[in-house]
Length: 255
Image (cartoon, rainbow, N blue to C red):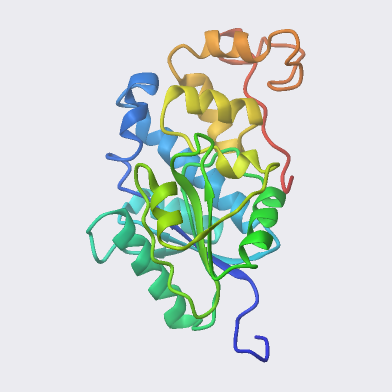
C-alpha cells in the first residue's frame, strides 16, 4: 500500500450470467445446446489472461452459476454470489463493493467476460492509461459498447453497461481510453461475426478447443486460413483436427 492509502494492483470485477442464459445472441451461430459451453470457454480464457497480467492483483467473478464458479475458482478467481440479482450493473457495483470491503483503497475495473482473445500485455496497456483518470473506459470493437470501466482509489465505479454504453459512460464523466493497439481488449463476442474476429486475433486454449465444434466451422477455417492470412490459424498437417480442419490459433501464454 502506498503512503496515500491506495493499494497497488488492480482488482478486476468480471460479471457472468448463469450459463444457460449467457451469450443468447450466439445461439444462431453456435446452436442453443453448445452456446453455454462457449460462454464458459470465453470466461475461462478472459479470467486466465487477466490473472496473467502483471498489473492485476486479483479477479472477482460475480456469478451464481455453480459450474462456472468451480472452474473459474480453480484458475484463482474469487467467486462472488450475485446477491442483488438485479442485472449487470447491479452485479458490477456489488462486486466492486465486495472488493473494497477487503481492500478499501483498491483501484477497480469492470471487465467483460467474453474476451477470449484477451492478451495480458494489451490489458496492461489499457490499465496504465486508466490509472491516469478517476474513471475511464474502453469502447468495444464496434465503438458502441464498453469492454472495460475503471475507477481509481476513492472513486465509485458507477457502471452503465449494456447496449450503447460508450455514450452513457462518456455522459457520466468517464474518460475514454484512446489506445489503438489493444484489439484483444476490445473484441467482445456477442455474434458469430464477433467470434470470427476473435478467432482471427488468436484465442485462448479453452475457446480454441471448443471452436471447431461450432456449426459451419469448416467454412470459417477456410476463410481464416486463406492465402494472405497465413499464421492466423496455423499450418501443417490437418489430419488430427476435427473434420480435417485446422484448429484455431492459441495465443501464447502471457502474450
